[in-house]
Picture 1 (cartoon, rainbow, N blue to C red):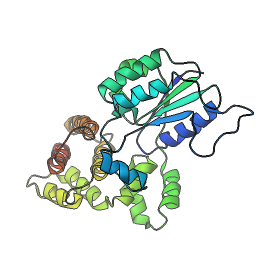
Picture 2 (cartoon, helix red, strand yellow):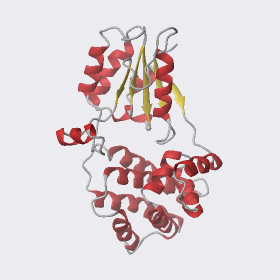
Picture 3 (cartoon, rainbow, N blue to C red):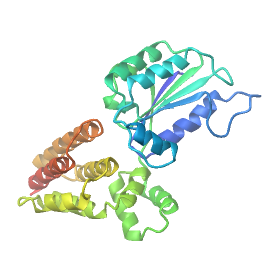
Length: 295
């Protein structure tokens, strides 16, 4: 079995849950009892709390802010553990989620482990934007792509997770999700319906007088959280992409260009210290350019 796997697809498709289930299968050995909860031979690297204050929140089980990157220190700590034998059996699994949020030095450090993996060690790299990974990391992994889900399956998942949502909200969430159940549920949790309507008006008519952009900033709320900003960025991408196939000529080219810029912005947002209002103005400006081209 290959030692490194890249689990690629949109956010919210269940890649992390798959990685956890796969890791348990990989480390399981006949005759060795397996723990139900935390497994000593499955190591997950993800965003750490931002500071000591946020660490205390995590310890209490409260919501906490995280660092923007997976750090080289986390990779080096993991590599030190690889010099010892697994605890229960002969195999261990390393999950990195999201691998595309590793800082550059962390990626370079990980590459050494991927080039010469210890015997019995398997790497599962969860990536929402695989293109952000080093080509040398991608080339050492086998890729498993997670497809978007069809509306009927999305509706079933949404109904299970948000049973109190009305039909119109569910329909809007499915339309805005791009096939991702996580994005659909986040759409409902973040109450993004009004923002989706603003994006639709901008794409339909442009925004010459900046009225819709002002409305957008108000709808986003004062000091929107990082999670809300990321959800809005994801919604903007889906809104732009949905009309690309039906557009033609200059309108289609403008939408494609705007979508590419939006993808870049979305990738930068977790690690750059953008002002939220200016970022939303930039996003809505890209949508407005696509709306004007359609005119």
